[in-house]
Image (cartoon, rainbow, N blue to C red; front, side, top):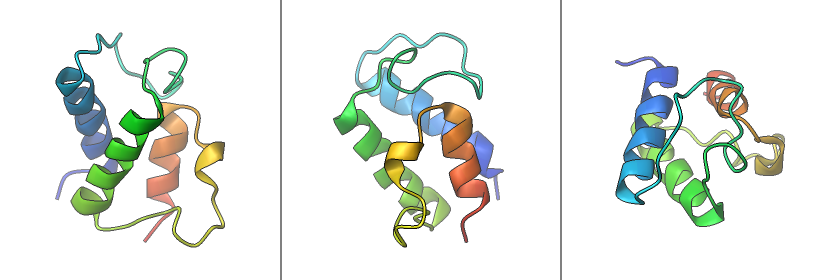
Length: 83
């Protein structure tokens, strides 16, 4: 199985391509909204894809609010700590 980080990066690229967003090179410190240009509907789509691909929802318990996820690294850490 692919590493969760690879799945997350691939998903970000796929959604950006589908939405015609031009991404800068991805890195953990990039802001999902301010630097990458994702909007709330994009992020909702990303999370739905990741839930299917990784078979986990790190936000379901309410212990980790989605509003705490601001960067690519935050997203990776959320999934690294889930499951």
